[in-house]
Image 1: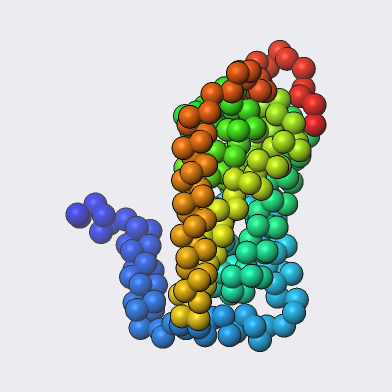
Image 2 (image 1 turned 30 degrees about the horizontal axis):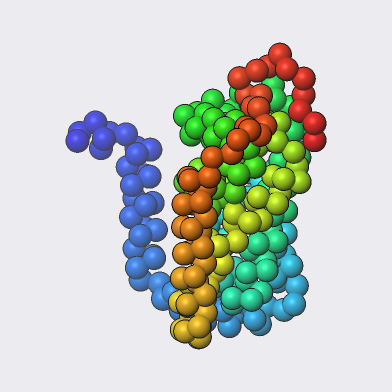
Length: 231
């Protein structure tokens, strides 16, 4: 304890953390309804700016769940779903193309992680089916799947199609449930959210039981001598 107290930087950090916690507890925070009202008053360009920010930021290894929840909370189920799905698909496409253009030698060195190896092995065995399944279960980070697919030999359009199908159930469920925090969501929309979750679970069961006769793309993460995959 005495060593900790002697470290001025650590003491300063702890004091700052305490001040932030105190400010968060004492400062009145807006309700979800107020946040959605504020978004509606921010003007017609606000959804566009949010869409662009969502697309660009999630190209990097930044969790997209924050943006998905914010889409439902700020814009409601219809506009929120369109913004979340559109930005996610564009971000996935941009990350794929950038990683593939940047090259295996420069990007692959940052992907030597057990989760990446697991994703890579699944891509090797199941190809574009793995892309859809990984999007459905979302246990692997969004950016990791993007980069791993770019460094495999999977083609762009099957990758993008599987991404769209894979993200729809979970994204729709998250956006609708986030909108439900405002208290204005129709019970039917909550039922749609539950149906989306059920569809995602059904997709996982199908993926586990479907045994493709021929493996799709072959990974290039462990094969540096092979030619650069086709875009």
